[in-house]
Length: 205
Image (cartoon, rainbow, N blue to C red):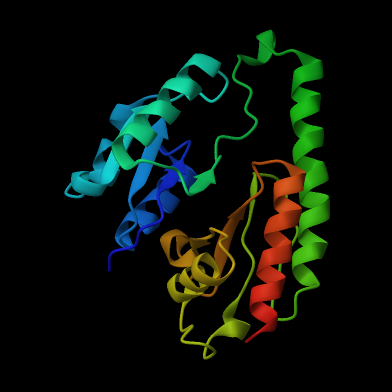
């Protein structure tokens, strides 16, 4: 399968960004795969270098953001889909931690989770438990299997990517094919827009 939309994905060395980059490239899309340490993302694009570009990018560094954008546009001519997967993070030894920064991060994630869990559960067919921590949810979506060619978590993720332009990671990558992984390591505004698109797409099934 060959697709034309150019993806630009941040935070691809681990976790959600890495799995999303794999899925996008597997489906034939050209993609810019970025990470603070690009060497950790090289294996994601192996064998698909003709339509993939690995770049170093720290999203908190404006100079690197501008340079990466220019490199992407030089290679592919444009960027159609931007996934800013690099979320809030705080790295310090416990004894060095700034309590206000830790609290800010904690409150931001708690606010997003508090909005997202009930929002997903209001979509008929979703079953989403409230996690104790982390920055992602793992809702059950098997109620949609058997509709519009959806038979597993991969085809459900494909459906949302095609119909809603929302990226989720198939649960099979984490041991459960009845679920998908949805990250909330982004702004609440983007989360609300994503849920709106998911709801609209699934209502048509």
